[in-house]
Length: 389
Image (cartoon, rainbow, N blue to C red; front, side):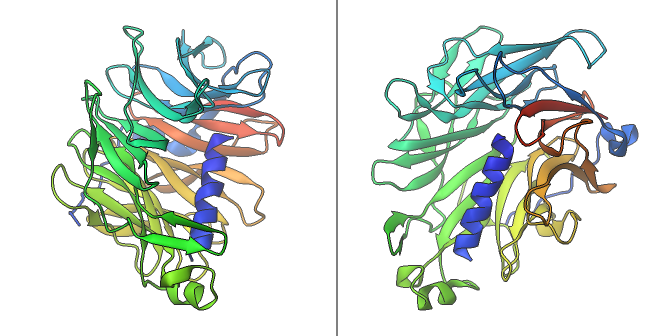
């Protein structure tokens, strides 16, 4: 399951490592619908495949994500639905002329333009992203910075993509790419281009862009090396050399100027999404336990979303214009996962998987449709799911 995989990757990085004012989003139409009453519906996967997940939902009823084929190869897909009964009427579609494999649709804007990412070119093996216009069928590959690392995660209504791109020297940069998608705009560095090393490797830290809103504000994370909290321990024990560890710090870039660091106290964190009201969601990891917890930034302050106190990991991935966040957390046993939804008015709610499935995870959210998207699994098969609220 891609969402769980991303969660575990981030959790591992945090475990290794030891602004501008924002306003709270007002709860949207789902508030009156009652998120606690969200009913799960399963979506079809590709023939013979065992994994599928909804990652994004558009207001017009497009559902983007990924699915495996019978050979275990992942593909970016999108679903459409006919009728009013969510238990039937689903159709799954491959992105036509997609040259990338093991990719997924990370976001869909209100114009029906999708951003695909996460995979590699089937011929060259180079990591690539693209935008796909479902209205015209046009697929446009996005430019990079010369390195084999590209992660195009969000797209706003103007078509601006929030992207993470590696250059030829191995430095990771937070970037944006605007139509006609011929030029990469490198966002101001947050001081994260320092070298850091472990006993068996050496890398350069950098920044990643994971969210963009219609006002041009971008959020993400800097892998800043620095003397914060745990750094001396890692240096003293020769886990990280040069007294530097890749400390994750959530960032917000305004349309111009240097990035603003979002508060984490003495811990680390990652920002994943921002809406037009300036509400930011993601996670903050405790400085002592390194446990990442779902977090919102409201008026510049980080607010714990209220996940169970003993979780092993949690993160908010998606955010609606109405202020509804979605994500997932791993329970204390380290095996059971649960999707959740949160808003500043009604707080944190767990989304149970469909009957017969053990785990759930969530990424996508639509105020207009009163829906949340994600996946559920039984340990062997991962099924795409939409929760109707």
